[in-house]
Image 1: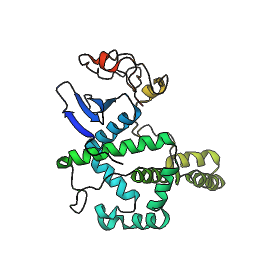
Image 2 (image 1 turned 45 degrees about the vertical axis):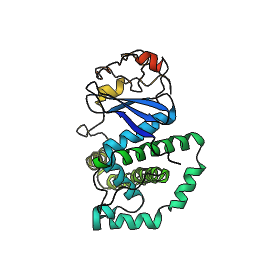
Image 3 (image 1 turned 90 degrees about the vertical axis):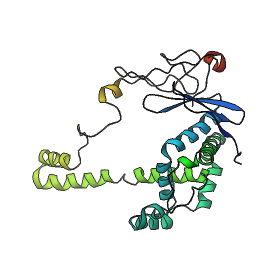
Image 4 (image 1 turned 135 degrees about the horizontal axis):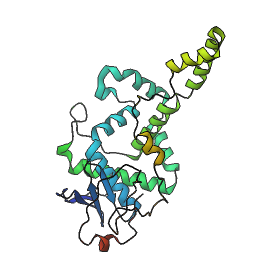
Length: 264
């Protein structure tokens, strides 16, 4: 059950980038770096994901609502006739809300705890930050965010990427056909022009030299990260040649958080 009033914003982001949220009896601190990316510091998993839901809705509500309606076969409410085809497909071949609820209920307790806390955080922002939200299509106020919305979007993403798996077989058939016509060396050159597997001009999340040298986190949950003040820990790994902006300390942060602050 969503607890009304859980998401009291104690202080807006100050000049140092820090702000505070309250999840029930627990205080959560949020630092926004020079790119505006929120870094969440919480004592418990529940509070961390509650704050993730709150800050994600604050930053990306338009995208969240677009994905939710698309995943539920309601994209045409926002996009009009252009989305009718995808809506018909999802309503015919997709899962019902009752089936999505059964999926959520059958998951493990940690998954349910995380998703429920995330939804509570989203809904806290929807209540408190409503004046900052764009209209959610047709001029109505946005509906509450539900666990089944998260499940539906997960299914949509799995299908979006998973249903393209037959492209490998399609490529193999093209290669076989071209090989019979022009020989294998020429066929591979032609296929590489059609389906290039390594395109140096394609945009990537990280530069190749950073990706190759990135150090994975040493462990899950509690982790120490060099370059951060004592008592604050970050889930971000550092890469050679890539300097993250320093997170400025707050007074008494070590006393407030101790040396084992939890980050999921």
